[in-house]
Amino acid sequence: MQCSSLVKALKEYAIFGVVSIHVGPESDNLPKSIDKLADYGFRGDTLFLVVSAFTMSISLSGKPLDGRSYFIKRSLRLETMYILAIILYGIFGLIPTALPIDYILNAFLMHGISPPAQNTVVPGGWSVASEALFYILLPALLPICNTIVEAVIGLGLAYVIAVVSHFGLR
Image 1: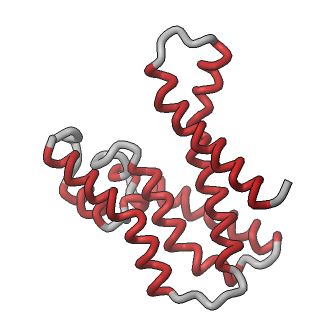
Image 2 (image 1 turned 90 degrees about the vertical axis):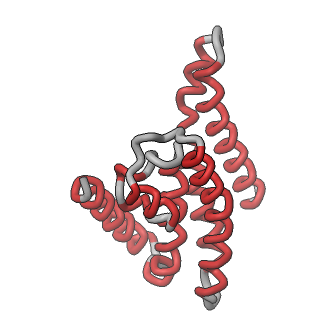
């Protein structure tokens, strides 16, 4: 199997997972095996992020990065629909527990650094936060993670940062 076919298949599995976690709980009388499979659908989002990281790392490595173009493209990709979601959820008052700071962090895609703000404005906002933080960090990580050892060290540092930010910002 070619790399592009494998990536395409993994993205399809990821999409299936995301759909199953949202549809499965709403479906009554599913066979137990299908219901159990749907429960693992939450892994679809993680798989999609990992596959995206893999493909973006390949496409960006070894090339000079035009930071302005890179960030504008990524920002427009995420911001357009997310701002619309913030406005709609705000207008209809669907998330009454959101604080003003939560709206500000969400609008600038920085709600990933504040766990309480991740899902208070738009349900599932944690996923967009993860993607935004990945896009911000990728250009800094690519030049320093060229070997498996460097990548493992980078992963360890990311884990420490995640734990500190999770417990330190509460």
